[in-house]
Image (cartoon, rainbow, N blue to C red):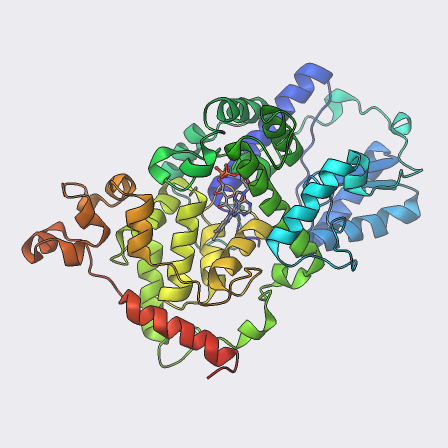
Length: 466
Ligand code: FAD
């Protein structure tokens, strides 16, 4: 129901298996996995388990999406009358949602002021205040009963082709094989990756992050999204590497910490504006934008364009490289995500929700708050402080961030043999016609200049400015 990619489900299960092994080996604590056929059944299943083991306390981490929050409320409603204390903790964010407010006690809706207030709070206040938690009288850990190990040794199931309701996507074994090699499971693997990143790439992060060929990002997202490592652990490592500073000092470290604050920002937005979790735009006036896939006059062409985008056959090599990488590997760096998302929503003027869902169905780190935030930012329906005239030029993005066409050659096989890197950013125009035809690579499905004007007009019309 939440469009988790098979690679993400597989990663989650692999991590649970690792946790199960370690909990049992190191602490003799069994990890039990409960199965519920639907969201609605979760409260009953949890209540049944609580009753079976005679638990007096239920500890859990808050999940902020609407569905998840409703589920947790329903669990509490069921358990409270039975005298079971439900104790929620905020582990997803460094600073809990709702804590960072403006002087007027308002939620920030723009990143930069949010970030400044966030940094100020983290610098000045004790970590207890980052969470704004009051001690729960029912949460006395001493009263938690020890569960007998051999009673509940449920094995974690393998990811199967069945059991993923709602998917029309087949599970691609080669993608799973790739992600299993690229994303080893477990907390130890996550900490090792973080340590290596801090030692060898953090300082150069500010510059390298935008160049996919340099592999300058941390690739921590899968571990963060799945809860294998906490954002606090990541933040603390970067902060320590920067001599305890969070907003001055090593440029790379400061920048990386700020990216973690983007993550916080989108989660805080999700809590303050639950509509973004329910397929609604953050900027309500953008509901009136006439996306090409909604307009009967352009719908058929838009569907062909959407298919070309999904398959990486738009005729824009950097966009196609990104889309093929996404489908084959379940991961993209931020730059490539922005390029692909901007192209779908501006050049093709296709509803961002289609792209959001497609990404979610392929990303190993698929995360509602960040994916939605990134898509709405790209589509100019979100929290971007710049209005709709922010339209990336895919040719310039390609020249700037993949100057030697390393990423293009890696993922767009048709162009691999072309020696002239400059030509690869715009092959239909820069290669001799006969050479271009021989590559078998498609011509651009839209003209960028015209598409840009069309997109800006569509937003102007929606805003009543035309
Ligand atoms: P690094 O560059 O090393 O950054 C470290 C961490 O900071 C990331 O792991 C992530 O948790 C956070 N972060 C970095 N950039 C951003 C950002 N722009 N917004 C919010 N948090 C950020 N991130 C996801 O985790 N899941 C998603 O489903 C997701 N979908 C996205 C969709 C679009 C259209 C866009 C533009 C961005 C999306 N992002 C998403 C944000 C970002 O692209 C990824 O977090 C990042 O590329 C992951 O790689 P990394 O761990 O190497 O990040």
